[in-house]
Length: 369
Image 1 (cartoon, rainbow, N blue to C red):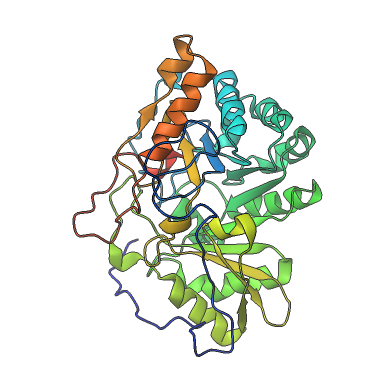
Image 2 (cartoon, rainbow, N blue to C red):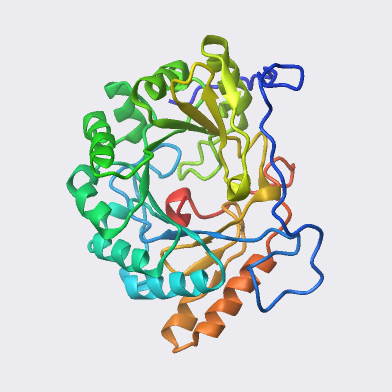
């Protein structure tokens, strides 16, 4: 399943001498190091990054066992009493919103397998976030899409690592492709737009489908985002030579369908995906180059795990537990201070390319993507 494959060194197709504009990332509006942690105003770290994006995991459980996320067997899930209630999560969201967080994404595990998820989305919607989204494997979305849209969910990201039914089953190790494709239709029918399709290309596994997914983006109008394989799998299968660099993805697509970089503006500058539209106007793709071109300098994300730990980086080894504050009668001010402390402790980057880098103990499913 995971053959050895060398990392390609193909040049970026949108280089400076190309006629195509280059993706440009700029720092948030606060620049330079901050000497003391502010106790008012936006949530900012020591490097001037304002944090407006909160990822909230509602469960570490999943009904699939994707190779990039979870072990195939012998998975140990958190005891239910350690999982935050929806009321606790909503309280955290309200505090975060009061601190200037404008965007929330609900994650897991697979968030749609937790009972009561529609009511929780309704609670989040009532808070008034500018953007309210959810990442899902799609298996339960056909059933829930209309209710989620009515509850106030703006859009969904749907994971789909192959357009071939047999390969899809091998990568997911559970489930079928058909329902996931129907989930995309259901999301669109419910008005949750744009539908984004997340693909993790792995060398020697599904990287021969890059052009197929690009064609899928062109024919459906859905934004396909190619995400570099990250060291957060549960089987310990990750190796650097299995990473398909974003530059290679772009080069292959650009050769067949010329691309134009979409220059970020405003809060878009802090988004993880580099966006490219097809020059002929037929759709858009994105790449998230976490491994080969880290975007730590513009990261504005903060995460809360399902068991109540604040994480300032997907690859962090440190986290702060806010569960005790929530359950011991702590005030909102205490929660706000913990959020500020978590962000203040953020490092300049995740150091994934440093020889001393160690893979986090938590898998993607336990952290919440």
